[in-house]
Length: 236
Image 1 (cartoon, rainbow, N blue to C red):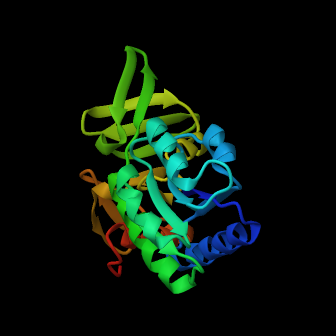
Image 2 (image 1 turned 30 degrees about the vertical axis):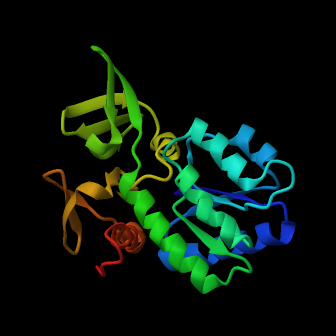
C-alpha cells in the first residue's frame, strides 16, 4: 500500500485527484490510500512518515504550498513531493524543497498517470525504514533494506535478513501497516516479500534471498503485477 496526501483548498480538485488515484490503482494493481486536506495548516499536524507521496497545490489559502513544503521538509527529508498547480512559473521553485515534479491544472488523467507512475516507481525503489525486534537476547534493529522476507507462524513473525533470522511476537497485518509505501508484497498468506530481493520467478514459486517461496493462486496476479511495477513495467 502507498499512502498519499492531496493538499488543495478547492474541494473539486481534491475530488478529481482522488478519483484519478482510484483509476490509477486499478491500472497498477497496487493499493493507493489517499487522504485529502484543505490547507497546509490542516495537513502538517496530521503528517507522519507513513506517507510516501504528497500532491501539493501551490496557491493555497493561508500558508501557501511552497511554505507548506518547506515546513514538511523540516519534518521529513525523504517524502516525495509533487506540485499540482495552475502556477507553473512558481512550480519551477520546487528545487528549493526538492520537489520531484509538477502537474499543471486543469489536470488531465493521461498527464497525471504518466507522472504518478514514474513517482511511484521511484518511491518503491528508494524508501526504507528501520525495524526494531525484541529478541530473547535483547533488542535488534535493522533496516528494511536488509530484510528479504517475513514469515508468519502462529502468533510469531520470523524476519529473514542478511544478518540472520529474528523472531518476534506480532501480527503480519500490523507489520504490513508499518511498511506501507515500501516495496513489500505478500506472495501468499504466510510470506511478506521484499520485491527488491526477488531473483527468480516460475509458475508456482519465487526465489527470495536464496530461498524458494510458494506463490498462492489467489495472490499470484496481484503479486506479479506489483513486481512488474517495481521493476519498471517489465511484463511477467
